[in-house]
Each structure stands twice: as C-alpha cells, then as structure tokens.
Amino acid sequence: MSDLTDLSLAGARDALRRGDVTAAGLAQAYLDAAEAGAVLNAVVTPTPDLALQQAAAADERLAGGDAPDLCGIPIGVKDLFCTKGVRSQAGSKILDGFRPEYESTVTDRLFADGAVMTGKLNMDEFAMGSSNETSTYGPVVNPWRAKGSNADLTPGGSSGGSAAAVAAGLCLAALGTDTGGSIRQPAAFTGIVGIKPTYGRVSRWGIVAFASSLDQAGPMTRDVRDAAILLRAMCGHDPKDSTSAPRGVPDFEAMLEDGVAGRVIGVPREYRMDGMPDEIEALWRRGMDMLRDAGATMRDISLPHTKYALPAYYVIAPAEASSNLARYDGVRFGHRAALSQGDGITDLYEKTRAEGFGPEVQRRVMVGTYVLSAGFYDAYYNRARKVRALIKRDFEQVFEDGVDAILTPTTPSAAFPLGAMADADPIRMYLNDVFTVTVNLAGLPGISVPAGLDAAGLPLGLQLIGKPWEEGALLSAAHALEARAGFAARPDRWW
Image (tube, rainbow, N blue to C red; front, side):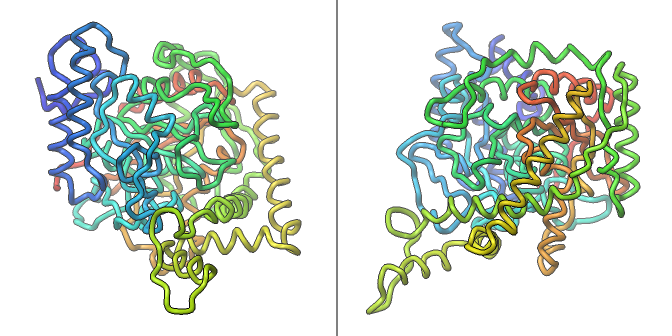
C-alpha cells in the first residue's frame, strides 16, 4: 500500500474495514506526519496518548464488525472546540492553560463514531482573522509555495491550522468553524474542500463563541466525498444548543451522484467587482463551463444588497464578539494579570484583558462596544441588522425564482505572503471575506471546491451557495464541479 497519509477519508475507511490497515497504524502514521510537519505550526497540541487509546478502541470495534464511517479515522480539531482534558485556548493567551471538563457536542459525536483525534489545530485568536497571524501560538505556514519562491504564505483564516494540516497530510480531515468565511477561504488558499453548513445544522455547544448568530462548524477535507462523510457525523439536533435545528440528517454521501443535470445555477452580477484579478474571473468562467458540461443551466442573477454585506458583517460580528468576550476577566480560568498594591477588581479586568487579548481582538471588541453603545446603536447595529435582513431576502427571492445553487469565486486572490498586510489598513485584510460573508449573514450553506492554479502555481477555489438545509444537493453539485475540474495538485513537500 502507498503512504498511509496519501489516503482519502473514504479510502482509509474502506481500507480499515477490509483489514488492510489498522487504526493504530493509521494513527501512528499521522502522528509521525504531524511531528515531521512541525515547521508549519498547524498542530499546536499533539495528543498522541489519546490518539493511540482511541485507535485501539477503534480496532476492537472494527474487529467486531461495529464500524461507523469514522471508526479509526485520524482527525485534527480546531482549537476553538472544547475537548475534555485537552488544552483548548481558542488561540488566545487569555485562555492560557484552559482544559475543559466537558466535550463539545461535535467532538463527542465524532468520538462516539470512533474518530481518532491526533491533535488540536492552530487558528486566529477567537477566530478573528483571515490569515492565521493573530494566534497566540504564532502564524501557520501554508504548505504551498509560489513557483520559484521560498516565501512563507498564509493558509488563510481563521481555520488556517485545519486547512494547512489537511493540505499537508498531517491529518485525514479536520474540524473548522466559519463565521464570515473561516472554513471556505482557507480551504481555497490550500487547495482543499471546506463546507459551511446551514446555520443550526451543526451544534455550537462547546465551541468557543465569536459571533453567535453567524458561527457554524463544518468539515475541511481533501475532497467532496470526504466532506459528505464527515458532515453527516457532525450534524443532528442538540437540545443543549437553542439554535440547533430539529431536522433529520440525510446520507450526504449517497446523494453525491445526483449531479446537477437539469438544475439552474445562478451567477450573481454583483460579484464581478472592480479590481478582480483576471485569473479569478477566468476561473469563474471555467466553473460555469464545467457546470454546463455537467448538465446545469447557468442564469445571470442579481443580489442587489451584496455591496453592503461586508460593512454590515463588520458591525454585527464585532458587536456579538464584544458581548461574548466580556466573560473573560481573569477571575475563574485562564490568564490573570498580576496586580499592584491598591488595585481593585476593575484593575484586574482591565489589566487581564489588555494582556490576554491580542490587537485584532481588542480592535473588534472596541468596535463592537462602540456600535452597541447608547447613541450609536440605531445608527450602526440596528441598521446593520436591517441590511442583513435585506441580504437574506435577496437570496430567498433568487431561490424562489427557480435557482437551485449559486456559483461565485471563493476568494479575491490566491494565498498572499505572511506579514504582507501587517502594516496595512485592517480593511484590506477584511476584504478577503468579500465573497463569503453574505452566506453567513443569510445563514445559508456554502462550499469551496479547489478548481485550478494561478500563474504562480497556487490553488484557487470556487464557491457554491445552496438553499437552506439542502447540503445534500449542494454537495452533489460540488461533486460534479470537482469531477470536471480534476484538481489533483498537492503542495511540494519542502518541510
């Protein structure tokens, strides 16, 4: 058999069931790969003892014929998910040393299905970032490099560690979260598949909150089939999460071959933005041709409030973050600042937050506090909420008019060098989310599929947006696009 780390999730599942490989052997292969890839800084908390313990239990289940899809599958878990007894810091100094006494609903479900956690993965602090440079652990390095260059590139954010780990073969699949594009943008930057499900499809319980009305967990995998397998295991109603929808979970993998024949795919004219690189435009047009070849009808559509999405998002998300992050005060857990004689409780709060939160988190908390303050609530937050409703209505009207899915670019560029935007206006960084934030504002499912390489040999992704609760149809469209794109490139191993 070839290198075990070259297998897809589906391939590993089948090999485990045939007895061609053991869960213990597979786990050890990925633990070794993660150690060899330490220079990428994607895996920040390796869990070898836990992984081998879970793998041994998986081998017993496999031997007994009790083998769910994920039994023995090595996965990486974004540091935003609480994992019992394992460091869970959300990439922040303020949660230094935090080891939860409970398991997030998502990881609990995956472990019940026999999944093996090989480590916790790096991320932007509290999921606030588009380049994985705000983490207390330091930046993640994209395993891809531009032709003729040794410059380190960003893997995207906030799920940059998850994206880099999957792309580099440090785990078979990974968990990410998406608040404004944090699964799809890094998936595009690293040449993998990432899907954000419909809001409410996956439980948020036990996931450290950023913006509660936008956050949604999803899988990051090597191909669409793997995403379908992992997503099914993650989904399901959870009474511990009031936003979790009591809906049945279809067999997404079984729906992959449904294809797109006879379906209508919308192409929003508002996504053709000034300054869009020619390579992105060309890729988008090739995507349309691929879907036509698969039997779909392409239709020009309008989403007129798209231009307001980014400013609305960067009002709503910081507002919710400022509320969610108010709980971190140095009293009960995590980092606590040293106090001087005479300091009171207010000094403790101020010093702890100043030391514990990084600059980007501080910026967003301050923005969020401002837009929620008396005198500005109506001018900013309330107005942004109204814009959000209009954006959601735009999508509803398009779907009511017979469109089945929407095709757009995932990102406005390929991966850029680490540090390239360090001194730039923060809005330049925020523009990386221009094609993805509408999906979160409307609560829709969206998926990024690798579809080509730019002139520098770096991956580019196309995004498909689906109807609410129709992840199966979205995955089948993505599968058809993936088959015609034929993207098989992998980063050259330099680490």
